Image 1 (cartoon, rainbow, N blue to C red):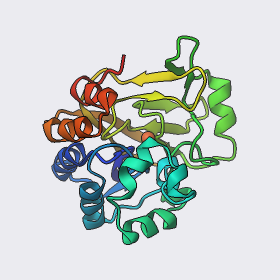
Image 2 (cartoon, rainbow, N blue to C red):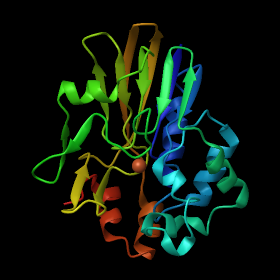
Image 3 (cartoon, helix red, strand yellow):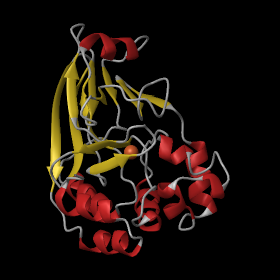
Length: 246
Ligand SMILES: [Fe+2]
């Protein structure tokens, strides 16, 4: 099976269009979406339109859930920016998304198979940056996973791991948000991929035998930058233009 995996689009329709165009030339059997589709200061409506036309198998991201699990006045910035642009049909679709999906040998989740908002492969380090978790911590969160290939997103950090028992865990990185500041943790922490490119992954194989390509797609962020500027989202502007937050 030859799969494309996309994740963490965050309303960046320009990055999504570039990734879809790239995937169209990769002769994949299937594209899967690991969630966090719309939240952010960019183009939630345009993203919804692109995704509805493709109807990819999709799991629920924490930011997809945050669009419907609380009243609008209790939403954070990222959801508040997006909610008015989303139709009832799109929000109903968000509500319908499962925590996990199994497709043949492949398990899909947004963050871990048990929660849509827990970091799996990376954790906050002492310098307020994401750092790679050690093996015991990765294994603890892989407990009960029998699939030979698991795909996760959430941290926006492209990673391809093979556990000592052969199981693989791949994070394709983020299509639309290459850097962010997480203010939910005190003290805050920053993640930055270090390139403004849109990310996705190609997984080719079956059983325990997989080739993984973490792909970095350059695109023109000008339209998205204008939208972020109009929202006063200076950090997003820098992230979209450079892939760095700080
Ligand atoms: Fe995300």
